[in-house]
Structure formats: structure tokens, C-alpha cells
Image (tube, rainbow, N blue to C red):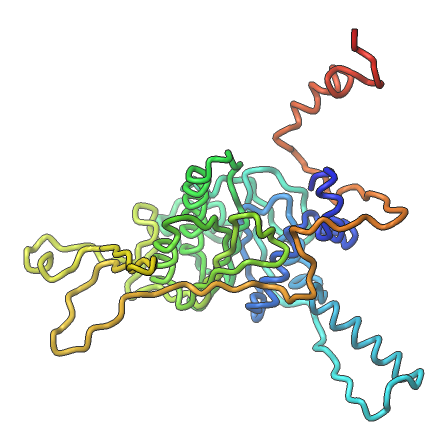
Length: 377
């Protein structure tokens, strides 16, 4: 988390440090959970691109420690306040106060966090320093999930699959939006490839995306292996940013599906060489309607003329997560009187700008100056 004037006036930036989160992105996962109830029945999770570890912190507090955070913590506070008012007589005795559900630590929790950058450890979480775009990471992940996994085996499917796969990764943006969107889509593809190897049927997949021109094709590809695909924008995500989060639920691999590094998605059947089979299939096509909506046909067997033709158009729903009482991420809030800037909860372990900071110290500070006017001639 930065320390610029804009950061200091960002409510989520200050709340993250006050509540002990490593980054403000923790609120994005909390607001996604409020909308989709991501953690219901979840005990085994893989967190991709995890550094600096704010999403892993949320997983640790909710699953391992059994804490109620986010909206759940607000409900607990409201319940205690209503009980206090009732005891003081300010609230009618017949006023019904509904107790929030009790949170307990879950059993057999297994959380694996992976990132290319080193991450400070968290209790109960297995941290791996690996590149999710490299095939060698899959055996490392399977070994972390199952200590009895034999790396020499040819299998790349988890014997003990997970319930949820998260990915908050994004490339270092260049400012060239087309390039940034393309690199992000490739990162998402690598995250999906790992998810296909470890997700159990009915599992969930949540990943960051950059909304671009052809993102509808990505939605259609995900719809092949997930029953529900929704695009969500948390309130803590700045509206000026093209980022959003794809929330995929109910993983349903096609019949005969096997995870493969050669064919990452692996959902489509390979075409046979016979002319009859080739003639009996339609090729993928894309049609832009006059109203601007793109219709996708991914290619399938020709339908029987006696059967009614099915509508091939599908549009991913878009939801805003977080109610109107949440802070506006784009607003610049006035700093309260006597505000003291807190230090980050966990400074970066190995920031990419470390060398620049060391060179700056050698030069005596910014631009080689240590005091006002020093170094000017």
C-alpha cells in the first residue's frame, strides 16, 4: 500500500491498516463473499497470486480462526448495541432481536497460497514461491495439497480436490490498455488451468479480469465448465479501473474431462478425421448484432431439424457488490483532525523497487539531497 496523498484520503486504505489487513484488496474479497457467499461449506482453498497476502488473511480469519469479519462483524456489533439498549430500557422489551449465527473454526482446513514474489508467512497457510504460468507449478501445488502425492506420476489431477480457487493477480500495467488486457487474460488462463486440476465438482473459481473488447469470449469459455458465470464489481474497486472479478460457481467438467497441459481447457471434443464427422459440425462463429451485442457460437454438432433450434446467445450478468452504505473507492475523503498515518501492517518482503530505494539512500535521499537546498549550486 502506498503513502501518497490520494492513498491517505482513501477510506479503504486507512481501514485496511486500522483493521490489520495487509492491503485494501481484502475488502474486495469480503464484498464478493457478501454477495455470493463464497465461503459456505468451504474448507480447502487455493489462493493464486497471493502476495502480499490480504486475501489469505481473510481466509485465515474466516476458516482457521473462525472470526466474523466484514458485514458479519457489523451484524455482531449491531446485535450487541441492541442488547445494550434493551437493558437500559431504551428499547421495548418485546422488540425481537435476532442473534447472528455463531462462527466457529472449521475442521480439516487446507489453504495453499502461491505467488512469484515471496510472501510473509501466515499461521496455518502453506506458502509457495512459484510461477503459475509454468507447468512445473502444478506438481508443487498437488504436493502441497496432498503430501502423499508422487511427483514422478503422470497424473496432474488432485486426489483431494479443493472447494475454492481464488486469483487476484494482475500484471504490471504498461498503460497500453490492449496489451495490459491481453497479458491479464493470459494470466487468468494460467489460473484457470491450475483450477481445472484441483477443483472438485461443484467448486468455485474467482479471478480478477480486465474488461476489454473481446472479454465476452472469455465468459463463453468459462461457461463451458461452470454452471454460473457472473461479472462482479466490488465497491472497494475503483470505478475508474477496468478491473472486475469473474465469479464462477458449480464446477461441472464435461463427461470424460481430464485436465491436460497440452489442452488447458480440455472441454471440447477433438474432431475426428472422417469427412462425415467434419461435415456434421459447425465452425465457431461470432456475429455482431445491430444493437452492438455479440453473439457467440462455439461450434457444435448440427441439430436435428425436427428439434427446435436453441438460442446460442448468452450474456454474462454484471453485479455491483457492496451496499450503498459502503465507502466510495473513488472518493477523496477529508482527513480527520489529528490524523496520524499508520505504518503498513506488513511491508513488502522483496519489493521490485528495493534496488531503487537502496540507490536513493546512497545518494543521500531524493535527488541526492538530504536537506532543503543542499546539493543546489
